[in-house]
Image (cartoon, rainbow, N blue to C red):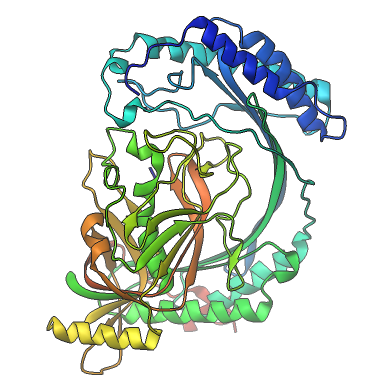
Length: 579
């Protein structure tokens, strides 16, 4: 998957207006002439807004403006040909208006009204024209204030605010200190022509194998500059540039099962792009694996010792633990709340520590996609220890507070066009009980023998996965391995198998970790949940699990094509196929 307080009465009018007055004082006067034009326009309009809407009935106690300026270059190819090559430049304005008070406002969850995960917004002018920008902000502010008032009236009249669970009695929004940081804007210059040739070359190399049904290679360069001001006094300007190359190849097994392999390269310095030799080596590996998967037997349902490589273990922790430690899930009674009441309790073996650190840029030279300086609510990124030597210590927090966690820890994140909520950044798993990977494999074989199993499973690579966190569904997770081997205790060579899904329930699965390796590995990807798709990383060593259950992967009844690809059809030589 990738998925609010008791009936506190409204503050007295005087108290609310005092809050509004404080917010206005925090904004200062019109923006400094040295600030970027976007910030000047936002500050000037914010001052005007709070002087009026802060005294309205009901008052807006908090207003935030965010403008995101984004440049994207994309080049995509398939089977030796160019599919697309384009660029885009966009600006998006988001206005957040909160009516009521920090304790109870228009965002409060009420019976019969689903949360609005998308963020209302509008296209903004690409010109740094202060009067035009102010006009756009003015129009969007009025629209969002009216919507907030309507929602707030529904909250006030709802019976649900009269009876809430303990966590739902937490305030709707957290008080935070203002932050001021203005960084120089980031810019990129991309020549797409060389990449057009590269995607042709890489996908043509995939097509050299008759086992490949389809291949797609995509290069993406993205720069964004984000500008944020709010009525608490925060004023931010920061940016980031990311580059990514993705390789994707598809095939089919004789029984119709879809086979896929995927790899990606991520970098932030244009001089660190992977060279052709490195990419072609990866093309060769993926092609060889696709061929091997076509021949691999199906695995039967199994429960027993399982060894996960670091990348696979990283995804395992992301799915099994990470989503369940997102703070906003602890407030929602429709959520399973697996760990809500377990602060201070041991939930993992005592040699495991898990933290989420979006301030870390790389591990052993590999870029971490979950790095950022400020989250999407204007709070500085923070290194948060979630589990310390097996004991649950904290949750990932945005600005939706909990009773014992009243502040954000810099994890309010979202895809553009969605509302920020608590999300993972760089989830890092560390162990105080390590051994070399060779020693860990030997320990794995000993565990197979101890349990008298005919084999154990080695999960070498994982595509991703999903987890159910809501009460309406079983509290289960599913992780989707791509490369899996049977490991035999008698010394026979490992045997590749296919059709495997890892399944289980979190409270049981995470307690069965018995040993770890000593070399961290990185999984970079994009995670989808209620606030859209955000870049994340997970870092973990190899882990040995005494018992893990796997089930059969869903398959297709479609068999492979009757004919081979034209270039590999001996009867088609000389008729337009390859010679």
